[in-house]
Length: 253
Image 1 (cartoon, rainbow, N blue to C red):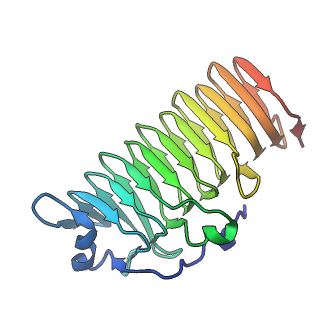
Image 2 (image 1 turned 90 degrees about the vertical axis):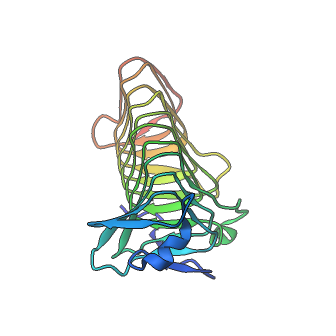
């Protein structure tokens, strides 16, 4: 699956680069009530406080491992136009409490978007509300508890999405499976720069809403209802449902 991989490019005008292998640098973005404190256990770098990455800044890893985890006890906030990890040096983010949030300014065009989005090479892991705005993520998103909300003008997720609560995925291309065990799964194209799509299977354990999306895979609702408005393509049965189904457009092949 190849979707918008050309967009996964280095961001321009980076202000500061923090290296997880250099605690003196990484401590600057970890806040606690008393002092900065980063602890390393195997491949996990732990912040007892909250991680806040200023707009325009990046986090890299010069450690020998190909993948590490940056973990925070009191939440993670990326302020915008950030870069986390590299293709061969991935950095996953895990929030143990409070929310995980990626902020970015509103973009008026694809050209404007280049300096108003965040690139992450790594997974996002959280049990608390996760809000993402204008992101390109080469990795999985796994939420074990609270809500997931993805919005903005353009998003790309190259990896699977697994949630256990209400999930809103707006203006997002997804290359991977999407499974929601929560109350509602809603995928929508809304005032985008282009039409959005999912290349992979979709499974909702409760209510499923799809608005103006193209789906290249099986769409399955195990819950009370499904309202589907878009184009659906699969080699076998494209749509499986167990209860009420409202279907507004045809099924492709």
